[in-house]
Length: 469
Image (cartoon, rainbow, N blue to C red; front, side, top):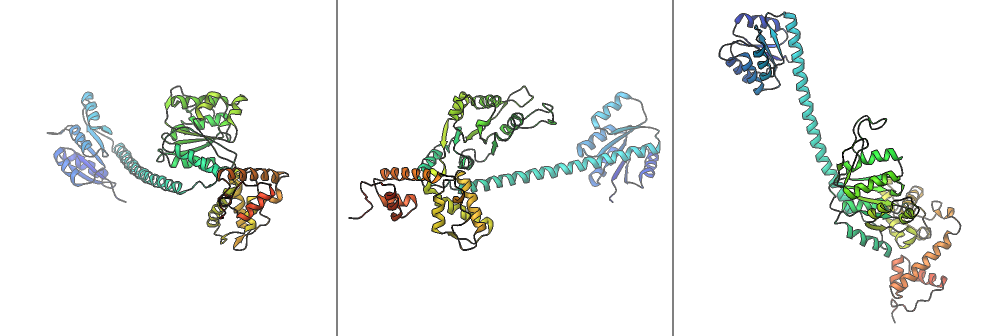
């Protein structure tokens, strides 16, 4: 093991010899008879500790140790004194940041213990500096990695398409495009599984806050006290278990976007606190009196009708007006039947890669069955359905089989689906002025199938511009 360097400075040769004998077995001992000589040694040798006599000609021990501190503050400094000049000693200790003073004469064993502890302090200081450098380097790496990951996530979200060609989804896309370039509060409504979280992520990663954090919090998964702490943070001792100060999501997401999913599940108390954030951009941690500022874009989401919740007294009207700045309603899958084929193909490609599956597509019967289901769980249910089909399928394509939900469809659902399909066909007939070719293409079916549906529903188109005369 490398021995630490010990520099002894005294103008008395006898003291130098005595101290050298005391420490030579444990340290690499260097001696100097003046301050100038000591400074020369410091330039050439690695020294851990300097012991200097206070009373020396030209340069006192205190002056030398002050110079040592300026050269290398890590070096431990001890001063020897044979005098009881308290004021001079205090000045020397303060100026030279001296570790300890030792009066003459000294006990050899006591001096050895003092020096041993001083060197341990030196080692600890070096270790702390090493750890600090490593921590700083790790923080820099994490910062670089964080920038890289954010870049990758941004690229990923920028490459993700919110799928849908139906007119109702085109309306959604039009609204989304209008809100991408600003930080307006957005309210996403729609049934469970329609893709509210996906749309919120898309808005964030294509908007002006894309370089900051996007954080999601479901307001229905935590009791009131825990949700308050999660959103606004808390002060140490604010409640049982609050063992340290903690930032809330409004601080963590500062500059970014916070998705408050199922916002209607917030208690009246938390609704008031959220209203203050939206109105004033400030909040208080649990247990604190002072306010903190935040700049967070709020995207709220709910599967309930907030206006009905307001009328029933379960949601504050003033908060509703604050979150309803830019509402976007995502229609259920049963209202955009023409998107099911597109979504099914997307889910097939997604889970085929995940499961390393060689299935290449769907049979026509399987696709027809998928389009005939009303999906109470919406797109999320369709995703799960396709994943199950891939696991169960043995051939090159997915065939109609036991994975289909038709066997468990609740009574009357087909009647409801027929009503919706008839309404969609009638709407498209009006929209496309009876052009059956365009209507069939938008519905994802053949003209023959469309004619069959028209006959089934006793619909007579006025004209068909898609037919050549």
